[in-house]
Amino acid sequence: MEEIMKDKIQKLREQFQDELGTVNASSSLEELRRNFLSKKGYVSGLMKELGKVPPEQKKTTGQLINTFKQEVIAKFEEKEKELIRLEEERAINQAESYDESLPTENPCGSYHPITLIQRELEDIFESMGFNVEDYSEIVDDYHCFEALNIPKYHPARDMQDTYYLSTPNQLLKSHTSAAQNAIMKKYAKALKEEGRPIRAVFPGRCFRNEAIDACHENTFFQMEGIMIDKDISISNLIYFMKTMLSEIFERDVKVRLRPGFFPFVEPGFELDIQCLICGGDGCPSCKNSGWLELCPCGMIHPNVLKYAGINTEEEPDKYTGFAFGLGLTRLAMMKYGVKDIRVFNEGDLNALSQFVSK
Image 1 (cartoon, rainbow, N blue to C red):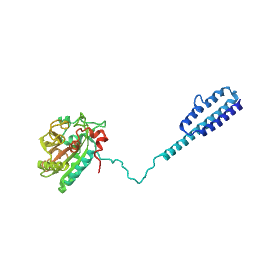
Image 2: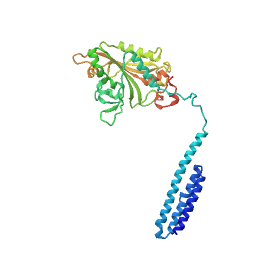
Image 3: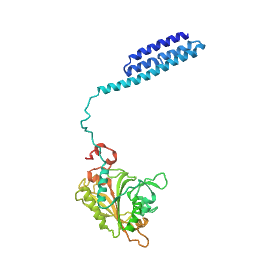
């Protein structure tokens, strides 16, 4: 019986070699695989016949069948790699030839419009003597609130729908004002000992739990600015704001200053810009008011200066300063005529590809 099985295995081996040699496509290889290795294939048939072999010959015969099966599997893998290589070569040979020296017409990438407006503003403020600073998006409760004259349980905190993190006392920055205390402390020594005014802007991404609509997003960009020295007044604030707006829009822009309450400035103002999308007639971007809130600003509160070590109890009014918070996202809407703030975060290439670097 063992010799009979050996003859069957040898004949199947020769049959397999002959049929494998004629295979020239993956589909043919798969058909051959089914013929030999499927449940109804030749190898399975040999395993069924193993039951008819005398017990003393089963081990040797089983080893012969298994060796044959492993040979078949190895040959299949080898042939499969060969077919893949041949198909790749055919694809290369059939590919359309081209001249590598010809110029391409690949579309250029582009900066995000908010990146463009931020860099333009940085250049403007640097030309006016401001330093550009960076600050973390994750801040602690002290710098985001208490250092800005917003103590615990102060009702002004209701204005901020803040994203608190699972780490105690950590939160996502809800406004760029969270960097004020650290920036003031960084330059306080130069101000006091060398008489150099503190002039700094610090752009960044902010997060609030806002209801999303055409003019509100829960992720947006701001640019905070501060200037501190002796005898700084509201007139200095107005001058720098007018200069910045005329530079960024390259034309006259109508603005209005309204009283506003912010715990870290006193007095505080809202700087509004006439909507450049509708020209003041009213549209969804400005909530049909004709004006768009652009820049909360004001004179830095004495407590904020004291917490940063700028002024002391003995000289509480030695230094004064102004602060402003530009909404970069809304400024980009006005400059580029974007009617819906959600466009900036949607990743729509049809919209963003308009801003191609030249």
